[in-house]
Length: 328
Length: 281
Image (cartoon, rainbow over the protein chains, first blue to last red):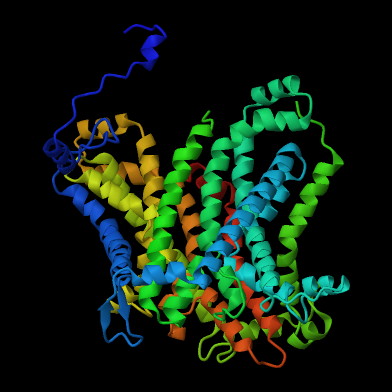
């Protein structure tokens, strides 16, 4: 093996491609990926016994409904469930060409963006500050982690009280400035309340991860940073932030998923099954169309569209972001 | 060598902590006042005198905001859900992870991918078909229906797989020399070794199960299976059109719903953070 610069651009030797049959045989024998352990048991039956419960649950409660979602998205079912007609891609074209669906999709994207940016930013800010102070750090930590344990619907219930038209302090505060805050009636007021509650609920999670990421930065690195970088901002930007990148990358995915899916409860508590003129996310629309509108085909088509988006999002995020992330 | 602490840092932290904890404090305080008091005076900052009456009513009275189920029953159901989910998750995922890490067997790769694909798609995207499957299996309004379908996500399996991979290979070699079979190795060596991991996952999963909202809403129409989270939805539905809403009862319900998870997480804080941050990556 030479180490001349030109050898870098030369392609690496590729092992001869396996025939399709050989590859299939490897899958069959369970050797398509490297074994997790150097030594493994070689019993024909035991692993099945251990694997079976999980596998059964996954097949019945994950694959069966997923397949059912795809199948029913091609059918138009009458509201009483007596008959179903094959309609091809109609449910998809109906969904994608409806203005209501597109405005929900736009709101969902904006909502996810704002919630992710705010809760990541504020979580990071608090974590950086908590990492600096020694006295009282554990109190801040306890306060934040207890908020983490609160369920989204509970957060939303309390939030709704704070935005209540009669007793809500937020409504009263807005009233002082001459603004009539109408959560549940006015589109943007409702969107504001949803966002605030969703961010409130997610800050502690990001805080916990950022803080433990910060605390794993070695003292020697911190000391070197103190010498090299003059301002606190430069230290943060050039030293701490790159070291936090893996945590931030992981949290980015978690936060987008949170904004898309886990906010269901918050939206349901605020909207209360009555869409009227209220903003909602795509997941909530799937629920409303399926359960309240009895549009099983349409709801399933929306499910499938969302499945594709989520799966693609995860793959794209891993592909694109992993390259820019420094793994220490 | 630490950097100098500026007052501004503390100010930001205090403001942040206040922003996060204030709604909780207001909810606890308001739950100790009567509905009429709240209606005239607004959200409470200080404790009131009606705590006993309110909590007694929420916990024991039938026909409050639901037809015939008490708050105590909802707490019990939430407990069953939280503990059942956590235990089920640990059992299923430890077993599956053991098979995937410690065995060579046919189609292992396929099953690996089948199980881990579940991490890609959350339950929320297949609400309607999941409901249909449950109704075909006659699992609506059962504890099985509340708990088992939620076990179909591979998070726990993922944690345990990572953990088992970090267990030194020498342990298995030594066990095999001593003549231990796979079952004996699992129960006598791996399970005791995983105790801390199991405890951390139990806490995380208990909180997750207790806090479930969407699934109980779909699965339960019979009030005897209502969890506290399900109760929150009904108390809001009852409000529409009532003269003075039962603010105090709603706050009391919120407080009851947050006590167990907050308690568990705060008490086992260190273990919880460790389990969360080290296994999630």
